[in-house]
Amino acid sequence: MIKHKAYRYRIYPNEEQTVLITKTFGCARFVYNKMLEDKIKYYEENKLYLQNSYSQYVKLYPFLKEIDSSALSRAQRNLEQAFKNFFRNKSFGFPQFKRKKDKIQSYTTERVHNNIRIEDDKFLRLPKVGLVSIKLSRKIPPDHRIISCTVTRTPTGSYYASLSTEYEEDIQPIDIDENKVIGLDMDMKNLFTDSEGKKVEYPKFYRSTQPKLVKAQRKLSKCVKGSKNYEQRIKVAKIHEKIANQRKDFLHKLSFKLANEYDAVIIEDLNMQAMSQALNFGKSVSDNGWGMFTTFLKYKLEDRGKTLIKIDKWYPSSKTCHVCGYKYDD
Image 1 (tube, rainbow, N blue to C red):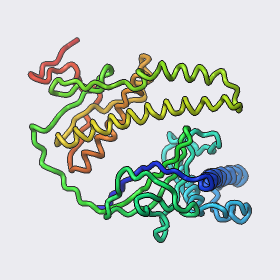
Image 2: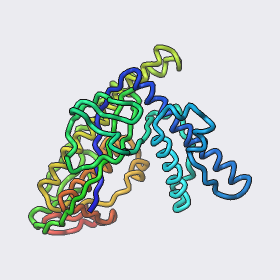
Image 3: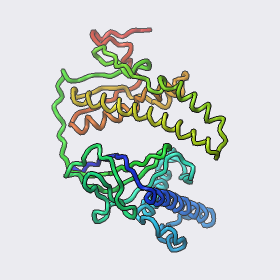
Image 4: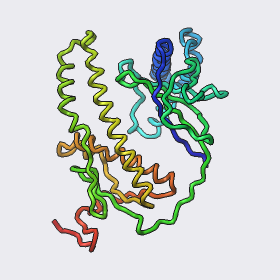
């Protein structure tokens, strides 16, 4: 059975490599937008779907030859997938134009003839870019084959490389031990209360950092956009990035612990978006990170042959005694 897994690393491109990566961001965005624009015009004129390719734009715009062609090919595939999703289910929405001012910029390149590889545990070789310094926080297993790499620039100006790999593994479901099954009930004040009555306290990273964030945002609001002082936005972005990293680190460790200790975990199938919009719970739900936690827990359990069971959200888990099964009427 072929499985996929991604490994994300911090990279440190030099000045010349940074310029080339920035150009690649722009060219991939340009091809995506140009193809989308032509598809819209062609449909308005002929009522037909235009089958265009990135290669025809390379001939018209020579500057596209300066960057990795795989990034342009991937931009085309992303647009085609966006249209397929829209035609299959209108809830995905019509494909939108990409903006230069988007907070996160990225491009994806495909691995061909080993042109993407890690060398000496210190460098990552990327097409056109060359050897880029990398912080190898963990090694990729030998049986994992790199198939693509996504280079991302965050709002703080940091660069990351996400290496997508594939490998073969036949995971057999384990026999569930009844003594190693636990139920988790989401708790707005904490993260959750388990079926044994234990509460897991959530550090509330956003709430605890909010005074510092408010001060930084207030200062940013008084800065003139485009001025030197407007670099205050980087400080605001760094605070947000730190909060996100703290939350991910906490949830990864907690889900790893649960996946190792239990054979099955039972949770409620909750609509987190609806909860965030109801009763002014927006900040609490977002800070809690329950949706992210369940995503982490699901794939960690599956990798071990274990199970994540979701029960109906209307099941009265909070009103039912976990010892005798009595259900409260109130």
